Image (cartoon, rainbow, N blue to C red):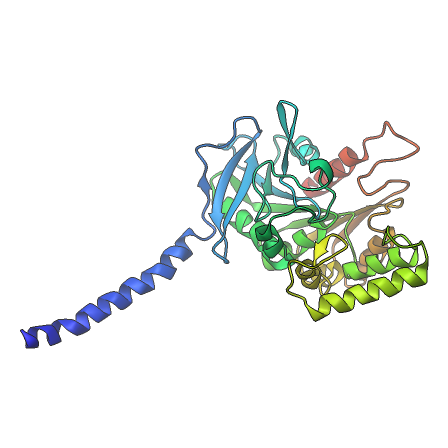
Length: 346
């Protein structure tokens, strides 16, 4: 009996080790694989899918249009804040990507990704209206809301979607508005298959530059007098506080956690887009008070100087959402997405 036990032991041990090697292998097989949700909400013009990313998180994404039609993928990413891509208005469910859907209808599949830590229809902000901050968000969202982890979620969804029969892999476009600009820039830099990337009303240098611009104009902190020196002093104190506790998700500055800021300040669209091989589209309104048009000018000059294939549209009088105060009937939001579409297919 004893000899038999000693004989079997190495084989048992080998079997255990082999089984353990299958665990990460199985996880790797699930990663970046799209699983269609059989309970996808029928009220929306999208089909819901799930995948796993490199952090082993379940990522939820949606693809619009005829799922049997092979078309290029166009990923659309909105700005900062703790909110779902979908919002209930009365008895209807609407999404924030209608302009993209209408511009590319029948020509491409729009792909949108839910931010990790946010559920379908979840909205945070004053009276449930998104305001671009993390106000009221869950601890999970605050932990997940770093630039690296958000970009990985988008990247995972994009890679999973490309494996579906509906995707034409020859062309892939990423569109990001506001903070979405740096997100899609990072995704494009990390995925060489991306052929086109569009940053709408995005930043150029680090977002800290934009905060400094607002502080010098006396309008960064609403609870302080509009005094440049006082506002700058407060900003520098906040920067020091963030750098002292960069991983904190409970301490907030300007509506976002220390972790949020510490993950974003070291990076910039100027640096990231300098690394991409994709064609680049930039757009900005000259009346934008959320992100100053100086960001656009700096970014455009930087990319031109490095010989990038960059197309730029400067919208005179347009605000952050491409509205025109002197032309209220003009739909600038529609215009900019149609301009991106024309550029993509030319």
